Image (cartoon, rainbow, N blue to C red; front, side, top):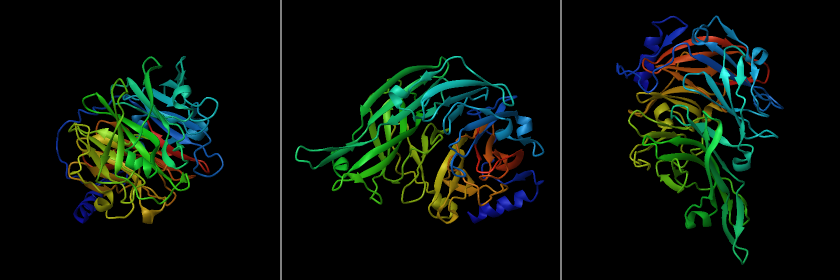
Length: 441
C-alpha cells in the first residue's frame, strides 16, 4: 500500500497538472478487447435537481452530450442544468446507455408515469430524440423498478422488484415468516417491448425465515459468461418475530444473491457467501460484472465488515477462497462502495466512502487479480463531494469517464486510464445550489 502510494506521487510529479499520472503495476500490453472503444462517441452527462433538500436528487434528471474531445478539455464548460434536456421521470431517472453512446435508455421512477421504459437517440448537446414507442412495466414490476442493461450487445435490460414484504403468522398467531413477491422482467431494448417475466415468492431457508430474515429489495442483475444464468443482488432485512416489526441492528446472514435461469427467468435459488455479510443490491448502478477471466465480481454494501469485492465462479457459486476486503486494501475502516465499474483486464474503479470520511466520497483503482486498491490521486476531493446517488461511468477503450461534482459546487469530468493509472482533468461541470451530477453515459 505504501509502496504503491509513493510510486503514485513520484509518477504524478512528472506530468502537467491536467494530465496527472499514477503508476500501475499492470504494464501489460494486452489489448482491451472487452471495451475496444468507439470513435466519435458522444459523452452524456446527467445531473439531478434537488427537490426539498440539497443533494436529494428528487427534482428530476437532466442530460447533455458532448464529444470526447470536449469532454477531455479542461477549458470547456458544460452546464447541464441550464442547457440540458429533461428526461422523463418524476424523480431521479434510472439511466443506461448503449455501448457506443448513441442511445440512452430510461425507466421512469415513481409517480403516474413510473415504470415507463423509453429510449432516446443522442444527437449532441441537448438534442435527445425519444423513440415513438414506450412500454410501461408498472403492472408487473411496480412504479419504482430497479433495472440494469445486460452486457449482451445492448439487446436486453432486466428490471426487478419485490413487493412490500408481508408478515405471515401461523394459525395460533405466532410468527411464521416475512415475504414479498418478486418480479424479474426482461426488456427487449431494440424493439422496446417486454420479452418475458416471472413472478414468484422467494423463500429463504426455514430456519432463516423463522428468525425473521427476508429479501427487502432486488437489484443489479448480471448475466453470467455462459449466458444461461442471471445473478441478482439482494438487500436483506429482518423482522423481529416477537413484535412483527422491522428490526435494526440484527446479526446478519452471509451475503446472498438470487440466481435464475436465463432466458426463462425461472427456477430462483439463492447462493450465499461466507466471506462477507453485506448486501449485493448496490443502489442506483451496476453492482457486479463479468471479468476478463469469466468470473463475476460483485461489490457489497451495508455489512459489518466494510465493502468487499466477492467472486462468483463459472459454476454460479461464490468462491469463498477469494477474499478482497476494501477496508484492508485501502487501510481504512467502514468502506462503502456507492458505485463501481469494471474497466477490463482485471482493473475496476470504485466510488466509495468510509466511516471517518462521513459522506465525503473518493475514487479507488481496484486490481481484482491481485486484490489491491489505491485511492486515485489527482482528483479534487471536496468535503461536499459524495457519490451516494451516482449512476454511470463510461468505459471507452482504456479510458473511464467519471463526473465529479460536490453538491451545489462546480466540478469536472475526469478521465481515468485503466491501463496506466493516468488521471486527466477534463471539462468543467457547472452546478447550481443543491444540485449534483450523477453520472456519465
